[in-house]
Image 1: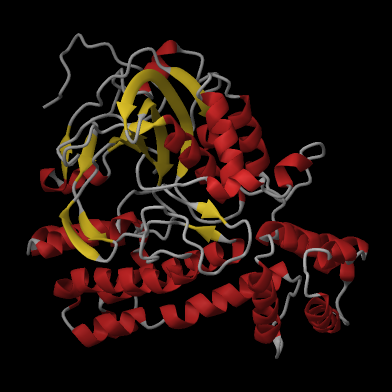
Image 2: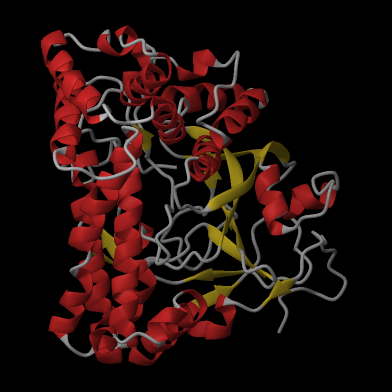
Length: 493
């Protein structure tokens, strides 16, 4: 039964919708409409995501579109709902969670789910107001598209819409909605929910749905004596390992790797207290709420494996054998380090592996960590050195000149037989000039709070193609100001 009266006005976004997650049935979600926000306005939008969705030209021009993507007007052809899941938060079982402020509009015929984050209370809000604030919405919008620009699997963001409605966090802030897009928003926590509640029928239905939609090769596998659920666990493990290798190589801290924030498709999801490293500090904690350092930068690969072990426990009733479930996780221990070394070789301009590469990688990371050398600037300057032969800008980053010179000698010897131009091309494609540093995001947020959204648009342009030079934008690629270190990002958003 529709939640809408027959005469309710709706917005037609020009998209065709199909049943997707909703085919699983009401045990998995609650149908509800978003809660309207007054007087919405555009903050930022991604034309690239609009094209991927298949939105028609001029899609933003209709007032009904702005209202619909702020949750104030129903979207034709959709039956919105919020999903239920559970999870471990900071290593502790938190019980039932769910979409507390995210409402899924539905799935397009092209196979992409569209979700409004900040669209109001749901049955899973746990006392919260169901809203998102402008600052966190801008950060998620920009970082989603920045990660895509870096080639890292991620949910995407179509737009941010704002409102002068006020919500309280540590202080009163402006409300906003970010429209998120992904093939699926299913998390490890969805499986944990039904396993913890001993609802094996629903657990099986969910696993079958995900395997058939996103991992069909697991049905035909000879691995684990044809056990499709174990093959599925292994495939998720390997996707997650590859994702973590990309995070570590680019210096990305997620900040809150709870099991309910882990994508079953190996996507980066739920951008909260994230940060791209400024100075390279392996023990850096980007989440002010993480007082124990559980999600420090150098802990992320181990935490991902811990989360996968929780997923394995949830799938155990379907896999049927604990030894098989553990075996399905085993490849993480080889996929992650191999993928990480591959990423680091590319950053070093190396196309083939050779003995001594691991020592070369570990050596430069140790040098950088000792002096907290700026991560992004170092790798970009090293790339430029390979292109123009000038090593001094790289050397100037280190006080330990002798240590750097010794490493640089090893690096040069490794490249003795390389085609310098090809190595430089690879390095410039692998080491971004622009990342979403906290201070850049903060400056764009503060301007947007005054209704000046030009900074959001500028950052989006740079971050969508972060390895290009973008002449005239060097200020966005420089060292962070001193005040950047005082920015505190927490789970509050």
